[in-house]
Every structure is written in structure tokens, then in C-alpha cells.
Image (cartoon, rainbow, N blue to C red; front, side, top):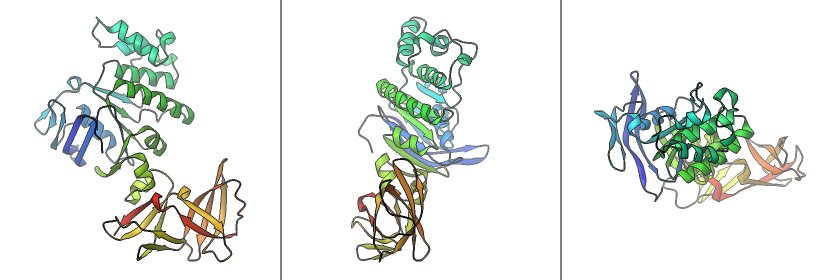
Length: 343
């Protein structure tokens, strides 16, 4: 999955919290200068996974190592303060009685604190706000302080726990871009957890899908978005059509048309996962389906298509497309952008 130096290695890690098994047999490597994003439904174990890496939670089996030593096992847990890990959380966790400058510099070696803090104040654009207190800052400014406080210590690993989720949509998007550039510059291994598909796709080099405490699938954003191997992954990362069908030769026969099946599949597919934007439609009075609704989204529309058997799917269409509700159409699938659920 990566050729960069591995900084943190999780091997067969399981974790119990209050007698409940939360994580099951997690194998995961975090590499320098790479951003890995964990995505999953609420309760899937995302935050617990971060807490085991940080050293806040103990593990019941397996081991967590960095490039030089064992950090966690059932018999040993290195304290969080000795792990050289930065942690940024959703609610910022700033000290309310300390200024921006003092929040960033809290706990640093006095000999270098002024220079290091000024450097990070400049990087996050808060040099002129250095004497302000947290309650005087916007949400975006507070999160920049939290990020600077984590990175000023030159951590080998940075953990982000829903770090942008409390911000409004536009600010969240802008801050993600800033944070990504800062994290790249810090040359740390980064692990972020989110339930936001856009954040996972925009922010990650690698995405890991966590479901019921187990890793379901991992790969690049492009791979998991266009060619997921299961329905949970497909649905977590955006709108998707799950099409049932029958394999005949190298064709997967669906109610909307046929899809070419790659010869590389290890077993027969039982369903296809197709994003609305991987489908094109054309007017055809003898077509197999009909347009039943249209939703306008600005530069494009979402069309709902109904097959003769009552199945429906969504298709993204250019707003200039003149196809009207009630039009009979034929569908064509971009075979390179289809994921397969295997029997």
C-alpha cells in the first residue's frame, strides 16, 4: 500500500472497553509523510483505534510498535507522553486561561519555546492574535491553535479525531486544505478518523474502512470510491447504485443494461456498485428504462431512472441535457469505474 518508512505498526490488535470487544485483529501500518483516514459508521471503533495508538487505552491482544520499540501489548503500555504523538480533537481542548501563544508553547523546553512558537504562529496565520484567549477566537482559529500545539513538538505521528467536524462546511473545506499542507511539511505519519466521505476522499492518501471493529477494506481514495469491494465501503464514500444481476459469459446482466466484467475477478460477481457519475444515458424509444424524476444541483442534475421491473438507480447528468421526465432511455456503464460484490 505504501513504500514510505513505517512509523507505527499495528499487528493483530484487539481492544476491550468495559468488557466489550471494540477492536478485532487490526493490522495497520502508518508511514512517514502519508495521511491515512479511517472512515466508518458511529460505533465502528474509530476513536478507540486512535486511543490505543496514543496510549490512552490498553490492548487485549496483539502489539503496537514504532520504528524502534514496542509501545503496546497486553502486558505493557508506554504512557502517552512518551510516544512522541500529537493528538488533535474535535473540541480543540485548549486551556481557556492561557493565551494563544501559551497554549501552543505549553510544556515545551523553555530554551526554544519562543522561537518555535513564533514559527508556528506564523505558519497558522495567528501571529497577530498571539495574545488572544480561546474564547476570543473563531472555531477555525481555535483549531489552528490546536494543530500548531500538536505540531510544534515535532511529533513522529499525528492523530486527528474528527478534527474538522464542528466547523461549517465552507470553513471545514478550507481548513482541511491548510491542515494538509501543514501536515505534509511536518513530515509525520498522520492518522485521521471521520464519518465524512468528502473529508476522507479529499484529505487521504490511503483510506481504511472500519466496520464493527474490523478493517473491511483499505486502498487509495480513487480505488475505494470507484471500485469498492463491498456495499458498506460503497455507501460510506458517497451515492452509489447497487445493481443485482446475472453473469453470462463476460457480461453482467442488469435490469438497466449489461456491464462488462473483468477477467481478473477471483469469483463470480453477485452485484455491481456503480456511482451515478459512472453512467451515461441516451434517449432510445426502445430503451429498458424511463426517467422518473430530476433534481437540480447547479452544474448538474441527478436523474432517477426506473427499469421495467420497478428497480431504480440514480444518474448524474449535465444540466444542458434535454432528456425530460418520462423519456425512455438506454444506459451505458463505465466499466473501469465499477466495483464488484463477489459471491
